[in-house]
Image (cartoon, rainbow, N blue to C red; front, side, top):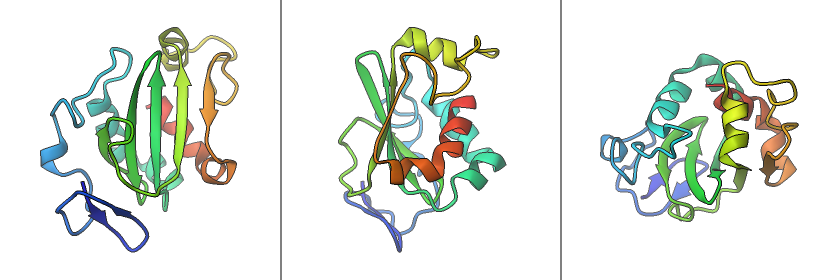
Length: 151
């Protein structure tokens, strides 16, 4: 996939402009139809891209967000604060820095519960939850990460 933007270039896409997810990426096994059993990425991406709070927190954010549940991982390509594509780790040939959220399925279930147990409501402090990546890449967008998990 190749996208072009004044700030970001991702190889392999024929779309000359970034305007959000392309229809060819939606609903396929390789695209937004992915589900880990804990997270439905199609619903997540639709909710995130439609959410005004996330849009505000994520403005100007360019990153690869890797979400790891047990032994399976999925990457989200985020450009200009919008999730464009969901793919396998390493699928996006880009120099964007990666942020990784990882935990066991039991930990994810507690964090994603409608009313998380005490101590499980924040991805930065939940026991067994790992948030990795350069602090300069993730710190400004920590509110966006929390909102993404809340959605």
